[in-house]
Structure formats: structure tokens, C-alpha cells
Length: 435
Image 1 (cartoon, helix red, strand yellow):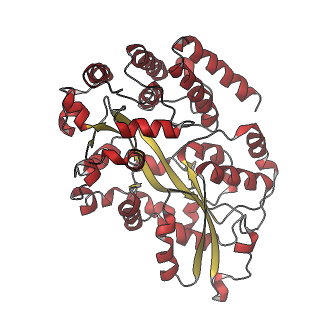
Image 2: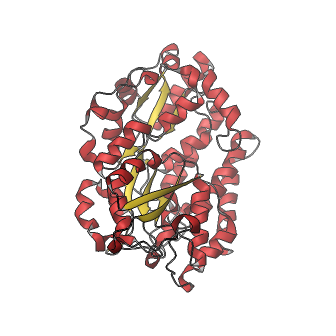
Image 3: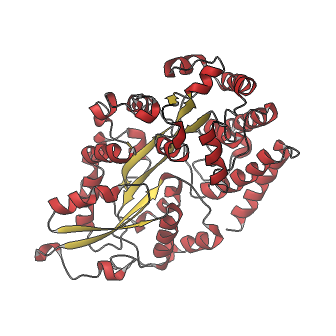
């Protein structure tokens, strides 16, 4: 799922949330949620739910509505960035929030700064559900003793690679062999050098991809627990920058821009100019969509030096909802192990409920595009080893500045990566001071 900057205006809006009183409006689309129905009247309660394209809840909501005759979920599906922007605006205004709101992990901390704007789900019995989820995932939406969100999917990070190009280059090509012989990022760079020499393909679309993967393997990201910027003190960020430079200087990473030049990037991926893609479980769909002509040529393996988590979300109930109890009934059903398994089967979003990892959908299902590899087995192994870092409410602001700036460094080889990177850090500091 793509992350985009929300801008200073939204930051100012959200900063004023604590000054605004919560109102009892039922959602941002009044015509959809204005109703006098109450559960005690025996009438159908309508719940407005906001989520974004790719979440796939619209595929299982009809079953919920069918089996819960007194509750109807009315989905409103937005683009990823619009869903968060709309929620920020509604909560800042003190009215217009939905009964159920989905929030991405990269955006979560800016909302959790204001826990009183959300229902504590423990009051409805959420604590009893904790055992059904990966512990690290459950804790991400916990503030003190309050549980403000229920986990949806996760994004365990793996290495997708072109098996045919690895074979042509004389590199290990079976998933277990790739993981065993490309154990370190130095091994990965060496493989990239061989690939370039033997096939002409870049091992990565962009050195930024490598930077992000290594950064996300650390104990911390850009902020500490007190929301202080720690980039200069974080050795993992410095390591990520070093490998960005190495990949660029070796000429083994392209300069394709997945964010602003998607068509060019997709053409390169589809034509075999890019040999790997470091991404989460949801990245499977990315490759299949962007490179349809490469069916059967891809495989997936563990990435060097551990793993990380890219993406994943939570369902929350804003305090504005008139029907919090019914909303909890809805979200607890939507994120239950059975329904997370169903969404995985339908769209590939990877569950945060380990009890389903033994299902045949994981252990026996092979994917034709991936040479019938049982990707669910790999994802399940990786998911349990994820290291989780605090992002902080200003993470996306800093990540956008650094990501966009280093994209320019990837393209323009005359730019000095160190100089540009630390200049971007100073730019981020200034941006944070002015928010």
C-alpha cells in the first residue's frame, strides 16, 4: 500500500483535535447513516465503514450482513491516502467520522495521540481476543490499558526474485538455496554484480528499495519512544544509507520510480530488466499485476539478515459512533481468524491470526504464477520473526521527505548520497518544527 504526504494543513487540523468535543454524528456521509434505529428497537442498525482499495472487506461484508439481520455494514471505499485524509479531517472537525475506520500502521500513531477520540475496545471484551493474534501486532494499537484497534492483515517481508534470471547468471535459484547462500546484504550485492554481468538485469528497481528493507530490520526507525528524531543516532539508518550507496555505485540497481513513474517501472519489471522485488506478502499481487508476461518465472525466498514488516492495518471505532456496541460486533467478526483466512484466499492479504497458518490454503496451495510455490508456508515462517519498531505520529512526514529526495539521488549520479541524505534530514527537522 502506497504512502503519501498529507501536508501541513492536515497536521494542523489533527493538532487541534483535543480542543474539539466529540459529537454523536454517525458518519461522514449523512445520507448513508442518519437513522433513528437503535438496537433496542429491534430495527436494523446501519454502520458506515471506511476503508481503502485493496483491503477487500467488501468481499466479505455481504456475508456479515446476511448473518446479522439487525446490523448492516455500509462500506465506503477510498484510495489509501484519501481514507486517512478524510478521517483526519472529520476527527479534527469533531463530526463526520464513520462508525468503523480502518487505519494503516504507518498512520496509526498520529491517531493514537488522541486515544479519547476512539472507543476502548476492551470495554467490549477485546482482551479475550488477544490470544488469537500475533502478540507484536496486537500491541501496536494498545495505548496504556486501552485497546484502540483490532488487527487486520500484516506485511511480512520477503524477497521475490526471477528464478530464470538467477539460473542464467549461475546463481542459486531454488528458494531454500537462495536463502541459504544469500544470507547477508553483501551476498546480495555480490549476486547483483553477477546478475548484471551475466544477464544485464538490475537486481533492484531502485537503491531506495534496499535502503527501506535494511532500515526496517533495525530496532528503531526515525523516532524514539518520546517522538524525538533519532536518525543521526540510529546505526541501522546509517547502514541502510551505506548499502544504498554501494548498490548505486556498483551500477546494479535501476532508477525506476514506483511512485511517480509507475508505467515505466511496470514495463521494466515485465520485460525482465529487474530481477527482484523486496516486499511484503501483498507484493505478490503487485508483481502479478505489473508483470503479467512473466508468469511462472518468479519465486520467493527469505531476505538476508532477518525480516521486517511492510504494512498492515487496524479497525477502530471512533467515539462519534452512536452504535459502538454493534460496530464492535462487526469488526470482531471481520478480523476473526476465519474471516482473515477467507480474505487471504480471496485477495492474498496475509492474516495476523497464526491459528490459520496450518490451513491447507497455506500449506498446500501452490500459485501458478510463482511456479506453484506454496507461498503461504514462507509467509507463515517469516511472520513469526517480525521485528516491530515504533513509527511515531510524524513518521510519514520524514519518510516522504527522505524517500522522495533519495529517489532524485538514485537518478542523478552526480549527487553525493551522504550530502543529500543529511540535507534531507535537516529539511525534515525544519518541516517538523513548522508543523
